[in-house]
Image 1 (tube, rainbow, N blue to C red):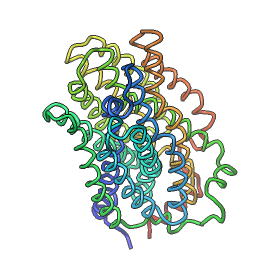
Image 2: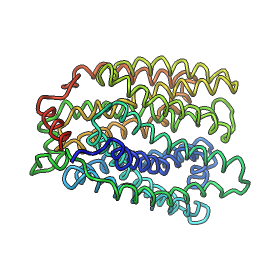
Image 3: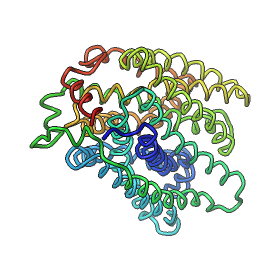
Image 4: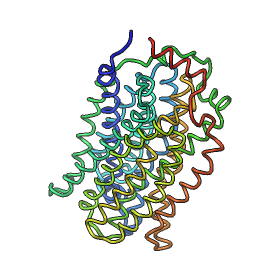
Length: 429
């Protein structure tokens, strides 16, 4: 039976957006509290070493993200998108609760950082199956304006990240006791249950139900039949990692460590960059519906280069207004790429292996750069003392993306005839 558009928004898109936002709230908290985690779990007489400890804990989730993408991708391609997404959001809440309850290094010694790292590894597993899986789920259900849907999925992550940042700002600025930073983690564990309930009520996609199941592992099928597309997805994840975690992880460090702004104020400034990202994702997603996803990927690289230079030049002026505008420029640059990327990546695979292909390839790329961007940028700044070094790093990443895109993108403009038939079939059922 045909499904009403309003029913799709209520039963599919809304649970996808809410669940994604809730999961990324949990994931982002450690990025927001990098400095505090370093102080509590990696204490050292060297302040820089303590800071690196916090970055190390945040980065740990990226190590297991590809493994999680393979695990949840397998579940999503074999047993259903709904099953994978319901499980991922539920499992995200447990390590978040443990981090909130975890005693410091001073209380239990080396066990504290070990448990913290274990929790981050589990969070990485869950996130590996969540971000791209939610987009696969929504886009397989909703065929109209796919770029817009892609942008909304990306923006929902920012809702979670902004919520984490805003709550962290309120806690660090208005609650006087030292352990107040734990409160956002308790809240994150509670709202993960809400995400589970919403996902549990969603319905499976027609494309998954109508697919022709493969006999072996999805990743083996991908390596055999989709090698170029898979490398392209990895490259996309790598560029996304540089852009996103400059905004989500590195800018707070940059503004506090190199511009002399206190943490609470830095968190407040960062919210403007995240909001710019959130608003620009559906805008650039809609643009991709007009100019094609492939062309939007080229446009995004150019915007990312321009916006990063403008953003970091403005940040160096050190006034409140210019720091906020600089954050906004950087946020727009990130959104220009992230917004339409889901629909572009999903064009590369058919439904039988789509979840695994997109999620695992993207997560490998994110593991290469998302977890290392803050480390690399911090190291370059320490060695060169050039405050524009982050803009140079983003420019280099954008150029690499522009070089690989035309060689690896097999279906640049439109789906194949085979996929058109499958889409037409799903639309009439």
